[in-house]
Amino acid sequence: MKDILISVKRQKQEIRWLCGSFIAALLMNVYAILVYRTPWHELWTQLLWVACIGAGLYVLSAVLRGIVRSVWRLSRKK
Image: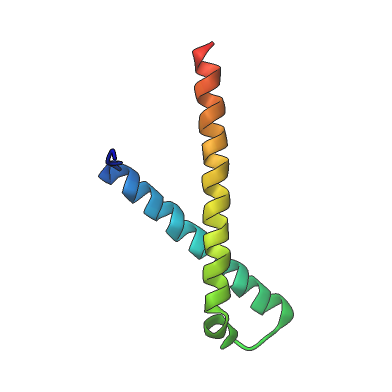
């Protein structure tokens, strides 16, 4: 078995992407609370859903970043 090493710089970058995804999901929840005029305690009671949506946004961003990186590398080889 070969070890996989991830640099500290890359780890910090991924943590930023994860935090950004969670903040985006949290802001979507705040927007929904304002638009639908629901009680503010929904900000806390729906935190598990916010975390799930944040994780989904992170996975989606990782896939899109992987596609862009692959296309970029293929276009530079020509």
